[in-house]
Image: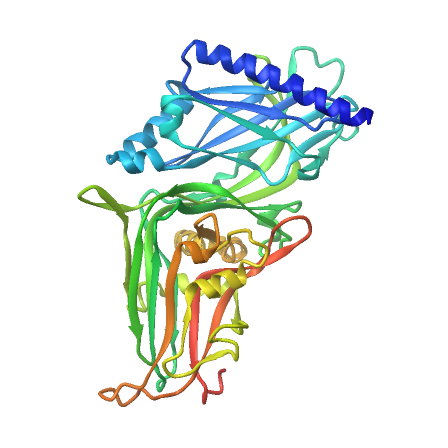
Amino acid sequence: MKKRIFAILFLIITSVFIIYNVTNYIEHKKKGLFLKFLTPIRTDWEKLEVQIIAITPDGEEEIFTGFLNRSELFLDATRGKFGNVVKAWLERFEIDFYKERFETCLILDVWIFLKNGTILSVEPCITIPFKPYDVSANLVVTKIELKLEQMRVINDIKSNSHFFSPNNQGIITEYKWCMVDAYSYITTKYVKIPFLIVRNPQNISAIIDWSFGVFAGAKTGFRLTVAYSDENITKKAPNVNLRIYVCDFTYSNLYNMFAASYVSPNELSYAFICAKIGNIYEREYIIQKTLDGTVLRMKPTGRERIREEVFDLKVYKVRNSYYPVCDWTKSETKFKDLMKWLYNGTMKEKLIIRGTALEDGKLDVQEMIFLEEILDYYDSYDVDFEIGIPVGAEIAWLMTKIDKKYETYAALISGLVVSLCHGDTAFDFVRGHLENGGGVKELNYTQNVSVYVFARISKYRYIATGSYTYKALVGVVFECIPEFSQDN
């Protein structure tokens, strides 16, 4: 009973402080983002450190690193680094409808310094969604609850006594994630990324019809993928144990997308988008520096991570609407090198889905399965991971074009994908199908045969909640093999 009363009092006191400080900012007509961190109630802490990275149309920018006085932080949308980020996004959209609805996120890392010398850090990083238009016009308040089950013990005073010596007067000890430039890659231009691939590899088979559509009933965008490890990634790659999480949207808006075609025997079809993407490889450091910012020493904590993300999407304007560049091609050479890495990072799996046309693993002539049925089948824990965009495979290809020394690292990241999703079930925003069109009279290499359907799955398991993991569908890659083939 006492614990319950204490918890209620804590929440009341916290709310009073928030109301007071927010009122103060409102009275001074501040515009921006007011962050309030709610630390675990039973945590005996003395300091709170925060590092904040913002997504920009061309990549990202670190906008804040430091200790907080009262577990709160105001980010001014009218000036400074955060102001520059907000301005860049507002200038990205000419049409007010899309400017007002565009949403991105801040990437937050938090370190809690306990009085007993233990340091806790969040895993995965916290993503704070916000709309640049809203923070440019108003004061937006966001409460961030720090839960013990989402934190890891990363260090203590005993293991780093020289960093926390009582004699270190006037010296600051802090933690920070630092990018490893040599193994990070951000595209400066839009690159074509296939998100749906249909292969009909046999010389004699049925015609395969396909379609894909996204309809803007609600926001559609790309989520951040972040993979953590306690090993030296570049030394151990590709044999590294990864803990992979999917966080909030780095880029989302209300868009319509559509593509459709057919695949004859011994052909394949790619549907693709154009985006700016990035692979950010980071190490966590404990750093000691003077009050004026001069770094005295720094040491890796042993934690490393890789972030895969979409920064921006190429769109074109038609009257008062934007449409993503969404097209398809049957040119096998266009994505030949990319496909090598996509296959490296994935596994082949026969699709057998109860209650659908693929209940027996194959599509008979004129039989059809809806794409949304396949996507929801893989979204087994309702994490809203829908279509895995092969960002890791694309970056692997681009990095190995520069230098073959990246081969082992490329093999590691080739299975990392970014979720193109709606934020809800696929039935609410995805429309599409695969259909066995059978034989065509004018084409003597087509026949009325059943085809088995295979998908490509990431070689990694992604973390849902607790200890649950799930399979990630990569690029919606379908291979359609006729029933009489030995390859099925």
